[in-house]
Structures are given as structure tokens and as C-alpha cells.
Length: 148
Image (cartoon, rainbow, N blue to C red; front, side, top):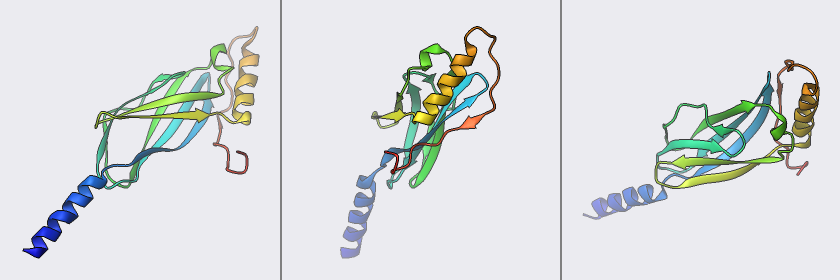
């Protein structure tokens, strides 16, 4: 009887721990004439969770197929993209909203580094008075702890 009670407590404890979802990392990439944002979502908890939707205030809805079921201790990347136009030139940060299957929303602000902003402004300044030209793809990494 004691072992059954212990098993029941263990199962309840495991279930109550539930999912622990967070935004792990991000990177901005300028591909051709589009700005791409890729965010990595991690589930560090013991429960599974669904990602039902994702939006970015500046880049719009995700291009990643959703919903997606995240198992415990797993990660999933979500991508956004939009044409690089003048309205993005003043963007220093964007807000990402991730809709979860339990009714909650994960909201995080993602900041562009100074190098990312400079590359985007350089591209946008090349658009002035000329037809859009393609840039070589450049991948930007988030700032390190020392840069913060």
C-alpha cells in the first residue's frame, strides 16, 4: 500500500512540474531583400506543450508550420520574415509572442545588436535612388554577456 501511495505522489509531482517554456536564443539574418528572425524556444520542464501560434510585432506572423508539440527537454525554432523596407530602419528591438496550448502566451523582446542595426541601415541606404540589389547573406549573432 505504501508503494502505491509513493507511486501516486511521484506521478502527481511529475505532472505538476509541467512544461517550462522560454525563449533561448535568436538571430537576425538579411537574406536578399528580406529580414529574417529565427528564435529558439525551449521546454526545460517535464511536461509536453503545444506551440499554437507565433507573431512578431514588426515582421508579422511566423512562416513556420504550427501547431507543434514540444516534448519535455526539447527545443523548436520559429522563423519570421518580412521585406526589408525603410520602416525597419529604426527598429532596435521587436516583440515576439508565442501562443501556447495551455492558453498562456510567452512574450519576449528581442534586441538587435549595434552591428545588426548598422548592416540593416547600410542595406536600406543602398535602396535610396536605385533598384534593390541583393546583399550577400550575413548572419548576426546575439550579443554576448560582455557586450551587454
